[in-house]
Length: 121
Image 1 (cartoon, one colour):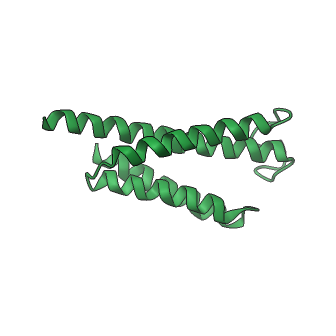
Image 2 (cartoon, rainbow, N blue to C red; image 1 turned 45 degrees about the vertical axis):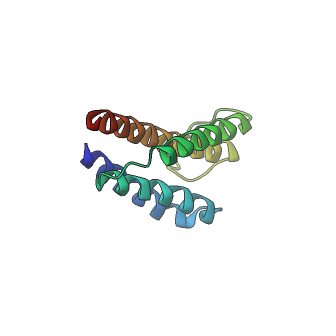
């Protein structure tokens, strides 16, 4: 179970690195570094269930908010241009997907923490 934290930790560090050329890097680097920190907490077998729950709620709320700001679905990738951003809708879709990945990780960590807690009592 601990290696799930290590896996997500490295994924979030990679996501953090990719955000340095984003139009708003401070916001996204912070989000992904917080997620990486939580992942490494899980790897060290330290479960802050309240933190995981609050972050999951915030990430889900942010993902829904970003998704609802889109005016049209244009996908994640522009055909023939790769990952270059064609429109704001693509950026919003990618931001929503990133927040969903963070939320799923926090929910997995929450579940692992509850399982560990119930095994102790």
